[in-house]
View 1 (tube, rainbow, N blue to C red):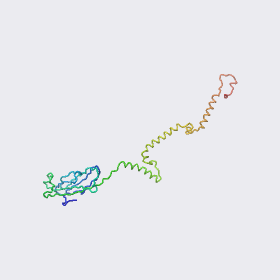
View 2: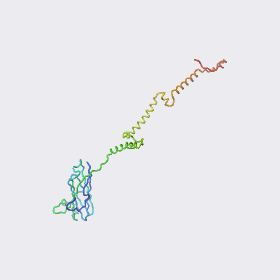
View 3: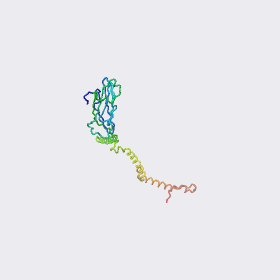
View 4: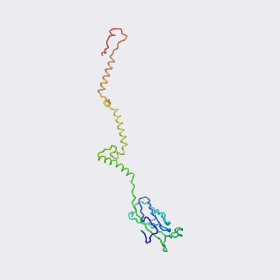
Amino acid sequence: MGTNKEPILIISPTELKFKFELKKQIPATLVLHNPATHTVAFKIKTTTPKKYCVRPSTGFVLPQSKVPIQIMMSSQKEKPQDFDACRDKFLVQSVKLSEEEAEQPISPNLFSKVGGKDVHEFKLKVSYTQASSIPSPVKEVAASVSSVPASAEKAKAVGVTDPTLPSSPAAAMGSGDAAVAKRGHVQSGQGAAAGLPLKKQMSLKGFSLLHLFLAALLAFFCRQDDVGLKKPDRNCNHPEQRRAPLSFKKK
């Protein structure tokens, strides 16, 4: 809003808005535009100088030019009580300068109204807006994990089963442990097969106890034949012994 005298500078924006965040410095920019053909001196004041830092607070605006003003609000430890209706204000004073005054440094009395000096003033209100919250990485990870069972439920609802989808977040996070456990079960199964009784081992390999018994019996009779077989004595000259047939030895 302006005073009775219309400012000779075009000031934008007409209200300073700060995106409030706790424990952070919050910047805002003010632009002073001089559309005239003469130089204008300016000075910026605020009702709470300890809260705001203005750079530059005084200076010149050359004809047909603009000057950006950086306003920084100091970090706040808590939310202001007047957050919804801030009472802070800024005042922009401007004075038209002659060519001789434009070449001189700005004096403290340049903006004094004593003696009827023409000083233009413009007041600016301050308002706060809530800064957009940045999503937390932990929440994003939790959301991605929770989406896994949701996909499984969706597939189950339509009657499609995807073996690659875990049934729970714990299953999704422990898939590596499940693979290790599976390999352990296979190895333990092989070790258990080596410790089985002979009958079970033979049955696993395609042999039964009956086959084993018949093989042992056949080997026993073959051994008995080899022990009871008599060979003719080559040094014997007796005709009957030479003509005697082979026979089994009786026990």
